[in-house]
Length: 277
Length: 234
Image (cartoon, rainbow over the protein chains, first blue to last red):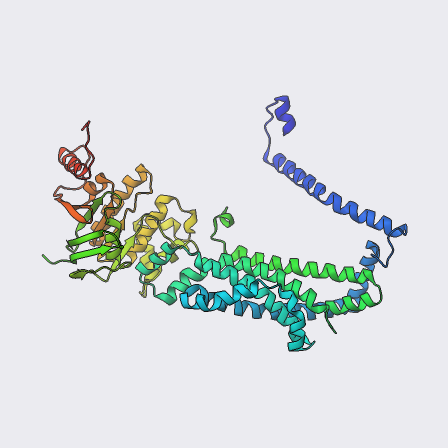
């Protein structure tokens, strides 16, 4: 295209030509973006193969792939993943129920806000991962402190975004609802909740990433199952390949759950101009 | 003559001087009343009281229960389709069919499933009109409903509102600062100034009214003068 303009030739471009050119430029952009990660992995592999990077520090990419295959084949990874996933799921569901209830109570009534909002703002200021020692004292070393830490971490983004969303709802729409004869319950159902949903979904995505982070921290402590257990075990035997595999699994799970929420978002917010366009 | 709206000595103030200062207003069933006034004259405050969004002390305040409002902005819920917006709050077994009819009446039968944010300004305002009419109001309150539309769309909306008013036979209170809009549509025009009615003009002219007609032109000039605008070239 650029050439055509430069030489001043007015060549008619057919649609398929444009499309193939667009595909090619997209491919080129993808290639530039992927080039440096690929180079890093190649360098890493070279460093490992030549003995510059010892396996005790970091295993070679090929070893990591092999370790991953072995972990999958033995079923260890799937079992561990299921346990970890359930911890996140249960903890996050608790956070969702608690966060949404608190945000509704505090967003819909002045009294509710006066009671609920100040303590939450205070707790929010605390680095919640630092609560782990207390959680262990209170709940022992079983599942409870791990799920509790996930729930505790995820509840704040959910509460804060939904509360903000409810407060930010256009007064004019609520007035319109009143003139249409809607009662308080109908206004909450038809106007407040759908109006605050975009904010809530942002909070859910943020909350999920916090949930996975809390899980990683929580699972390092005395886990007897889950991905964290596999990591602890591998650490004791200096198996850096397995540790990296587990870290990759955490990352993938985070991406996967985030993608899931994006799908929900795309459907629930299909009325938005950016979704329509 | 029976009255639909009967208000005596309505006063509203927000801490300072009264925005509405002892207003008397009565509207007959099926009457089309236009309310003119400069910004800050209290017209929107009066409309808010009539729509039930605001309360104010009055000696008498009779407002029909079946009333609906169209605001300056369409105020459609963006997360509901046009037809879902129209049926909102309608407690009727065939609400859907009535909404469909109302949307057809405003020329939106092909956009019933559309998202409000995909509508043009004129379409959105017509959807808001349909939503107001689905509930068969006795009193239709219009708060500068065409102020945000372009001039051509606005003229088309005048015809539409006139037709809908004839069809539904409801009383209309149109708040506007477009003098021609008031003259073209209303049976009676009230001018609000500093919280009181300063002028009342009956317009007993047949429809459709034309701007070139000397009688409408005369009323328009009178009203402009009342609003403090002297036309030097008129």
